[in-house]
Amino acid sequence: MKYLMVAAALLAGTATQANAQIVTKKLQIVASGFEGGAPIGTVKGIFEFTYNSGAFLTPPAPVTLTGFNAPYAGTALFSFNKMNDMLTVGNNIGFGSYTLSPATAGFGFFLKNVSTNPNIDSFGYSTGGGKIWHASNITVSPASAVPEASAWAMMIGGFGAAGGVLRAARRRRASGQAFA
Image (tube, rainbow, N blue to C red; front, side, top):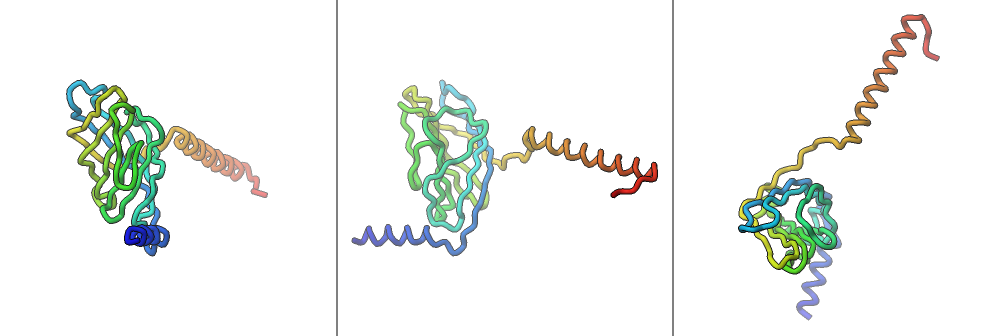
């Protein structure tokens, strides 16, 4: 009965957030210094998470990965823990934990101090070949805000259209035509 009451209190805390704030973080993570013989010497990628910083616990939700070069099975997920200001990230996670198996391709890490100065003290991956590889050097930095190619094309097209309108207006004024 005691455990049921604790579980109900935790669920009530996640259902009613007084300070609910939706936060999106986009971080570049580079992990290196794996044990000798690691099939991937440097694992890197951009991870994007959106979570409610007012929630005590966030259930596992998909994380957006860009340029991630380690293999994994299934869906990449994350979970936010407000009390520890920590994200759990991996392809096999629960509330505050991840599981790696040497028999299955996967990855996992804890991203600590999410709201202030994000850092990772352990990162592991497996290619499913019978071993789990651990990084000794991990860096976390904000992902650069370089626009996508399609955004560049729209921006250049917009400048061209604006220039065309200004040029046409100047020609009309020079020839004495007025706008209708």
